[in-house]
Image (tube, rainbow, N blue to C red; front, side):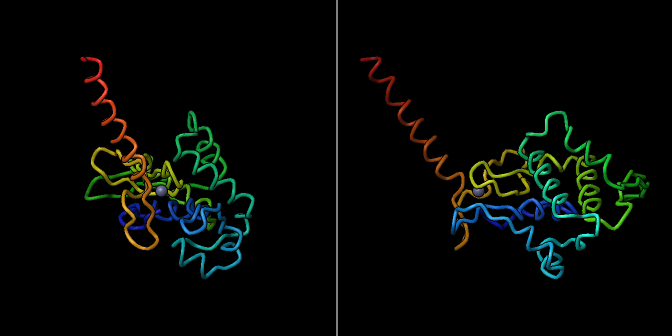
Length: 193
Ligand SMILES: [Zn+2]
């Protein structure tokens, strides 16, 4: 995973951090779930997720399911958006009209103090602004990152190690592709002979 230049805009960053409470750290390469511990530590929760602490309705089971469903959506596994739609009908959301640069726009707001509603309001607003599809997970380590490239073509969290904690996700794939192309270039010579 690489942590630079991955932040999502606005409240979508809370969603990205929430999804990354499950990760495969570079150092251990063992699946790690921080969510159960974070649920019992309001201060750490606020620091690491930039999100209000869980309300009574945000049970660990509910948050684990929400995180799993949000990750599936980012990984392209929510066919027909059934998972997201089920959440939108399950949590308290309201709609308001706000003026953005003088233009009235619909903004989805949480209608209670639950984390679930706050996260899903951010997802709804990201869907309407077109930024949701830029929240992706690395094809290698599954870390959630925001793709800020012009053509939305990023597939891995980082192409270089980028520091002590950086991982060269994508680099290995690029090297393999380069070698395959090089091998393909060589073979037509044999055919001509
Ligand atoms: Zn990665």
